[in-house]
Length: 65
Image (cartoon, rainbow, N blue to C red; front, side, top):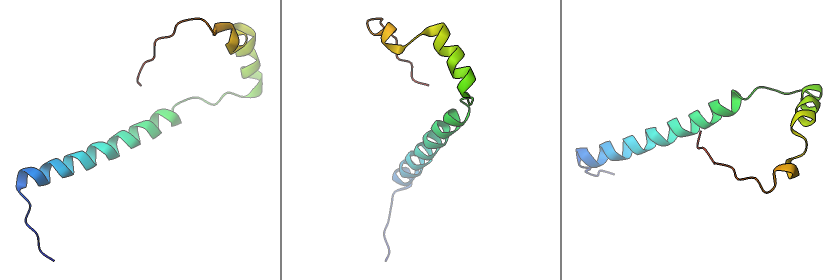
């Protein structure tokens, strides 16, 4: 099966595929960089910040990482 693709269109397709793969790998890397927290450390965090419902009415700014 033969088909012809313009160079510019081929470049766009390849660029899109590479960008998608890079985004997926970057997301995976960000998740892997989150440090592990054991039960003792989690208790300390809860003592400091209490329960999430304490912040129920607080406004947060969502950041894309």
